[in-house]
Length: 214
Image (cartoon, rainbow, N blue to C red; front, side):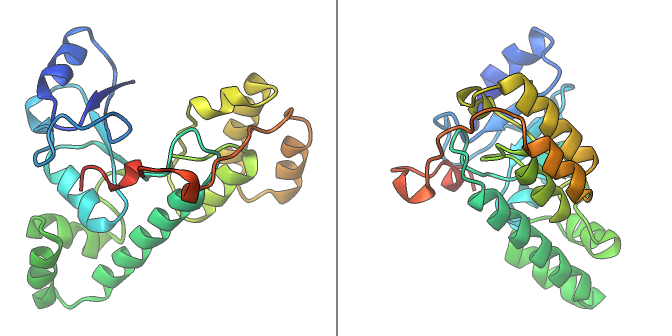
């Protein structure tokens, strides 16, 4: 997987040409376009995009995204934004499911997304693509938390390399994703993974990357 800047379709073309498996149109990089995202339907390679609410998620899916992830702040060890975005998404999905069929048109207009995508969410009770947790996931407990909140997988970024034993920590997080309801195993996984990374609170960050690319 490799990142391209939001809206930078030329970067995406280059990444596809060198046969990258997956492209992350990422708010972590400075956006190339502050209005338009890449038209992902024109590419063969799949894209993942960040979203902090249902409207953002469905707009990225309408553009061709094959996977959605939360927009938690990277390399911070602060999971609060990932939790906030997952809870927001879940709450808004429950709201859409509760609507009558004739109310879906107005909801689609409010979210600024195609009616067909809102109807899919209403009928299935989930996004049309998988939704992963990302940003601030630094421990097995963090991974288990996000899975129990409804994430279908977890991205673990470079922040774990600031910890004492990155290899052991990464392996423990993988096991935690698979066994996220087994508290006893989670305790064992958390007990011998080396010194934790030094966290950064979201209030200490001058520019929140999650606000990019709405």
